Length: 225
Image (cartoon, rainbow, N blue to C red):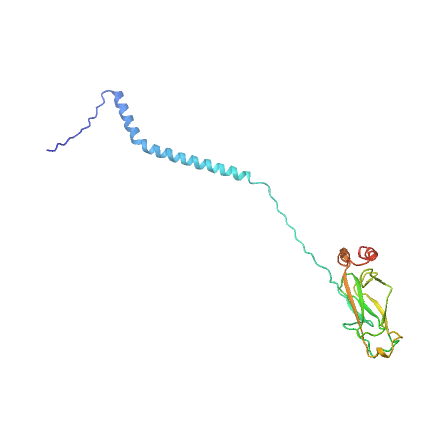
């Protein structure tokens, strides 16, 4: 047999005026407690956001220094190249010519020289003359060089005593002479003549760094002047 128990809450009726006021106050507090908490939480959130905003403004303010920027650019333009030509008889030559059949005592007097074309930077020049007795003749031909070229002390180069400028030219070998004391045994034999010319910019001591076998006095007078 089941027993059902019923509980009934009995509310005490206020008996005095003071008890009535206290009861009404309790009911009012009970009915408004939840909204107040919500309102209080919302106020706290607003307060926190306001504080964060003030902090971000303060930090941002510390980074707002006076600032300025400037820039500049430029270009470097290289000068003219260094160019030279070998000449024979005053004209540019890619090969040397010695016409006819030479005989003892023949002189070839078409000067072999060096020219520098226009639009060329100032340069220093050295040249080498090589004569090869190709077939073993008893004597070899002789070349006469101009005294404005200084013979190297430890190499086979002749160094021009001066500066080549755009459009300038200088003779190097004025003549080549076949010896007079050749004999019939030397007939039909040949000689090879080769001229090699090198030029280097005069500026910035280039010759002193590159032409390490050049005579010291030449370097002092021309390369480092």
